[in-house]
Amino acid sequence: MHSGLHGRGALFDTDPPGLVARLVGLCPFQHGPTPLEYAKEPPFVVFTGGPGLGKSAVLGELRAAYEGHTPLALIDCEDELFARPPAQRPGEAWSPVSQAVLTIAEQLAEPVAGSGRIAFPRLTAGLLAVAAGGWRDRDLPRIRQEAERILLLNDTGSWVAGFTGRWVGRVSTRLVDALSGTGRVDALSGTGSALTPSSTGSVVEPIIEATLEVFSEGVTPTHRRLRKAAAWYRDCPSAGGNPKLGLILLSGHFRAGGDSRTHAERYLVRALLADLDDAYTGAVQRTHRPGRPVVLVDNVQATAGVGLIGPVLRDRADGIADRVAFFAGLRGDGHPSLRNAARRALPEVARATGWEPGGTVSSRALLVPLPPHAIPSPQAVEGGP
Image 1 (cartoon, rainbow, N blue to C red):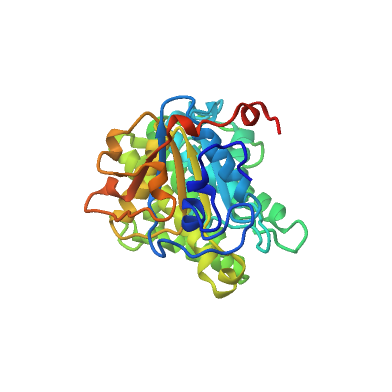
Image 2 (image 1 turned 90 degrees about the vertical axis):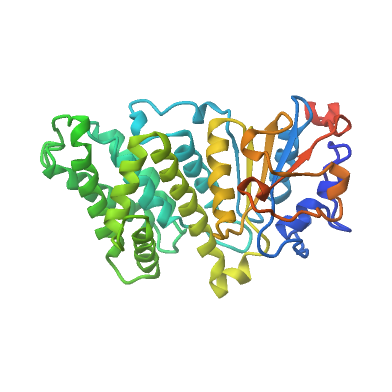
């Protein structure tokens, strides 16, 4: 248990519980329940320091401590995955933040001990609306591949063999068929003419219509969850209670770039967290999901990280709660977006953080510098005993 991480008892202790156990609600490695230090809003913990101080090692140890026992995701924001769009994907329909929420959701969805998969229907609808903004060319295989990857976020691990695969296949076909009336695709031959950027909106609207239609069909619990997710977008600003308009606006804001894209990305992050909250709010789900889900963000100073932490802190400051225990690694001593964050030395958080959010957005974060003596041992770095 954290034998390669010197001086980290303040984080990983179990009796009495260290910082990690108190924020997650589960003892690391042992997985027994432990009282939460913050029942409602925990701090967004950011480990700071220069290169070589073990920030990545701490996040890796956190993953080892909880993987398979509570929903967990780990991303490195300096990974090539977040540097540029995939091949053939237009930049107007992709950003480091949209890639981050997709990647995080795919990891959080995985089943853990005592609980099945988590579905992300709100995020699915939002990501489809964003992706549709890049479907004005005639690359049908790419469109189907992108759509199916997003649609798989709704997989709940149904006991009905093959249900998810068949549903995803049917829905992706419906989405492709929806383009046949836009000048985009010939329904029989599968060919079509490329659309100009100005006609992108004529692609987005039928995709959103088809998405809402398939979300509204059926009477199973899965379909009820999809309908609830679609209705969520009616509360988007300027949507006027119309979920279709909410998704069209989301897609348009994302394509516009700048502050408009930042606004759209905030909604994608909010959709991710709202879906995750749904997995915990039912009486049955609460019984089988002890503790909090854990999201680990390495190199949070990179674009994907800044774009992720901002919406989380802003929504928390606005009273929009989530139930995630966030831990991040930041290269350096601080960041302009965290100027009002509290700061605690590692020994100070061993038994209680003494943290309270203030009146600013960044006060929702807690910076914990890692001292030089907390560097992982050579054996840990080399993978030795």
